[in-house]
Amino acid sequence: MLMSRRPDPLPWHYCWRTNLLHIPLMTLATVVCGSLSLLISFVDKSGRIQHQVAQFWARSMIVLSGSSVKIEGAENLLKCPVAVYASNHTSYMDTPVIFGSLPFQFRILARKQLWPIVFIGWYLDRSGQLPIDTDNPHASLASLGVGVKALRSGMPLFVFPEGGRTSDGELRPFLSGAAYLAIRAQVPLVPIALSGVFDLLPIHTRHLYPSVLTLNVGEPIDTKGMTPRQTGELTARLKMAIEEMLQPAGAEAGKSQEIGVLATSE
Image (cartoon, rainbow, N blue to C red):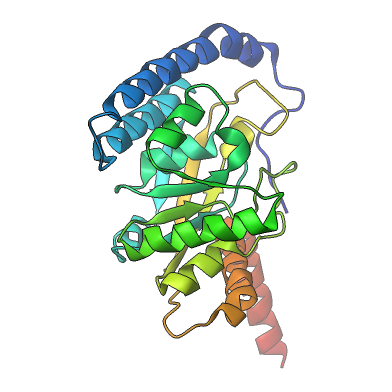
């Protein structure tokens, strides 16, 4: 069950602060960093410096939104040299949280519709990110093939398996792309759960509600020996892992207490 802290309706001072402070500064940061990344792309063939610019942009966006990020399970980010990282998708601000938190260079598998967007599309194209056309199954399969090659070359990938943002904060059905990539490349699949970002900026809104954002990294799921026929099974395991990390602490405690009571009564 979603436990949103965002007031409804949002108090007027949050709306005015977003319009007069947050959005102008965030737009400026995007224009400056996007332009810098575009210029650097002509000499930085590895994408390393571009990624550093993206990390700086992402962290700036979080600060300028009035929020902060807390990372739980950070040790799981360093267990695998190459992996597929997959997270729930709650907000446009998910991307800055991811770029600002993962401590290594990676590529994202993103919807093709983002590429025409000024500055964002420029960065995605010039930095070697991977577009996927979710409306065209044949094009999607080709994109996944490119992703497998990137993983086999030693480049980690990040995927939003829901394919789009949630409208109510709850998990949407997962697409199988993340699991397929991990199995084909025989690399671990790492679940990530984002909390608080939906409260900051839900879909169909443009006003920010600053808060503490949490990025929870789960244990890597090993795919050694798995075949593409097990893609559905792995996708279900991924979703379950993210669901468990999204459970409020109180709900987990209540669940444990209930199990204890049942065991006692038996």
